[in-house]
Structure formats: C-alpha cells, structure tokens
Image (cartoon, rainbow over all chains, first blue to last red; front, side):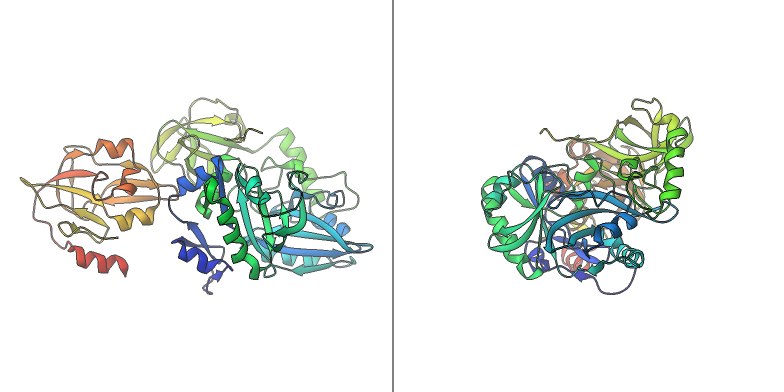
Length: 377
Length: 125
C-alpha cells in the first residue's frame, strides 16, 4: 500500500464524535464500526442503517457519444439503459479479466443531443477505471471526468429506509424502482437519489456535494431516531453483502477471472452493437464456462463455529478442491458462512464431504446455492 | 475504560487475577475486546493441560479476524468458562467479569506483568 496520508471524507469529524473505530480502506480512513458490528448488521436487516460511502469513485461521462463510449468500454448494454435507471456492469481487460464491477446511472440530459452517465467504481479501482475510460474514449465524442471529489455518498439501507427518506423529501420514492435514480432534494439538500445498495435490503444511496454531507447525515439521523436507524460501518457492510451473495472486488472478482468464471456472465451483452473491449476473449470464456467450468463460485455454511477466512483451502477427502474468497460469521444465519471457488465436481448444493482447512483442521461445511439470504418482498 | 486495580496485565492484553489457593483467573482486557470487535468463537486450552507464560494457548475469533490467545503465566488449567464458550459475546460485554476465559494453577510466580496503571499507559500508547 502507499504511504501517503489517508483521505478523509466530509463526515470524518462526525464519525469520530460518534466514537467510530476507523480503518484504512483503499487509502481512505473509513468507519469500520461504531459499536457492535453484529448490532449494526441486524439494524440493517430489521430496521435501517446509515453508511458513509464517500470513498466510492464517481466518474462522469457526457457527450453525444457517451453511450457509444460506454458500450465500447464496458461489457454491458449501456445504450439500452433508460434515463433515470441504473445498471450493474463490469469493465474488463482485452483478455477478459475483470478490472472492476460498476454501477452506471443514466442521468437526465442536461443539453440536447448529449447524454449523461455517472459511473461508480470501487474505491480501490477508481483510478484504474478512470484511466481505462480515458484511454478507451479516444475517437469518441464524449468527455470522461474524474468526479471523485465532487460527491459525498450516504446510504440509508433497510426496511425502514423508505419511510425515513420519505419524511425528508418530496421526491416520488414510490415510483422509484430498484436500480433507478432521480435528482431531488433531501432535507433541503440537492441529491441524486438512487434506489441501490450493497446489503440485500431495500434502500437508497444519496449522492450529494461534500459540503452538504454533514447536514444530510444529521437530518437522516434525526428522521430515523424513532425507528432504530443506526450508523453502520464497513464491517457490517461486508457481512451484509456476503449474506446477500454479492461479490466484492479483490475477493470474488479479479483481473485473473472473467465475469463467466465468477458466475456473472449475464452482465456480458454480446448482442449489443459494435465491438467492445474483451469481446473476443469473453466469447471464448463463455464457451469454456458452459462446456467445462474450471471452478464454480458456491456458498459454504459451517456445521461448527470456526470462521473461514479469505485464502483458506476448501478440501474434500484430504485434497484441495477450492479456495475461500470471503468468510465471516453470519449474524442472520447464526453460523459462519463463506463464498468459495470450488471444482465443478464438488459444486452442487449438498455435495458431501466438503470441508475448509481452518489452520490445519478440516472443519465440515455444507455446499449451498447463493445467496445465503434473500429479503422477503 | 478503566482497568481494575486488583488485576495484573500482560502486554498481550490478558489480565490475571490475584491467586486464591494458588489458582488465578485469566481473561482479555476491555481494550483488547474493543479492538477485536464482536467475538464469535473462543477456543480455550483443555482442562488439565499445561500453559506457558507468553505462549499461545487458544484462539479468539471476531467478525474480521482470528487472534491467538496467550497465557500470561505458566501453570496447569483447572477450569474453563463454559459460559463464554457457549456465548462468546460475554468477552465483549463483560471482559473483566462474566467473560473470563480460564483458571490456572500457578507453577511459578508470574513475572513481567503490569499493574493496572502501567497497562493503561501501555495500551494507550
């Protein structure tokens, strides 16, 4: 890691006043937890949680050929995204390796004949994504702009989040579908209101100017007081997304895997117009994954209480058959869980005899289909 | 947080009670429990086993990590806290009381342990 000082979000002083335990995350000093991470996790599952996600990397793409550029640079069909909607997608290398997973929001057009997108990258990959988009924009009538410092990002997630947000905005939240976003005003602050998240619950992500972040955080805190809204750190965000079976870059996703290897081939849209970076390699990867998948991403649920960690070997009959990519005690299941890449022969739910090598001891684990948790709609 | 005056402390963040009939109680400090976060699994030494000062004798798992448990003193384990095995959150909620880990019959007088004030200064550093 670099030795440069950690970056602090606009909410830094507020986190410290709340007694947060801070952690270095991708060069940012971020709240890991405020109190018990299990309580924070459960707040999001049953009530609501408030997150500072200002480390996420926003990149604005505008211009007459903004859609064409993104269709070329990313694997998804971005031209097909309607104004006010969002799309989960990926950016790959020419060899098909995943550079990052992204959410692309198509915003309202600010001038005729020019479309407007916001690409949200993981903090750890934001520079890589920005560089790739800049490079791939050559020849397109489109502008790629680094907007990482233009936004703070506050998320309110959990079943009570629509009611909390509704008390602070006139925006049509009822009409705002999952993976949609609209400009509005929340607690008097201009915001892009997006119905997206990384927790497996209903919820919203609010992109605002950094100078408005404290005001918005405090208004949300007050609005959520009566329904048990809790400030939440990155630790519970990780267990929430793990239960929801959502991949995390650097764990389930990497440059040495294609979207097909990660079981996410559905994000690759070969039918879109024009060429895109990685098409050839991904065509081969799709065929390979269909015919002879090397390893498959599965869920593992512990029979015992010892927690599998990223990098631990998955074993069967004393032989290594895979590797844990993420593992944690699951507050919702009350047992340790993990995501792991395992040989296809051992990937079917219920496959007997699968274990995880936990520091020399082979602990029994059940192979399950992902996700571990799905909210009742 | 305050570290009880009647306990002694190791630099690995364990505490040791004054011995009664040669048997002392061992736990981890509130500072250590806070640093770990929610403890979800504890592996304690077997009753009857020998532990040696400064050597690992178990594990504590939290949401984010696994940490070794070090014995603050040399001796024989006489009892483990079954309550904390069944409910590891006791380590977080009552590290100096209900979250104690095991009892040990001292083979020798402990050396190099810190007083409460010394430990408070050490753990703040």
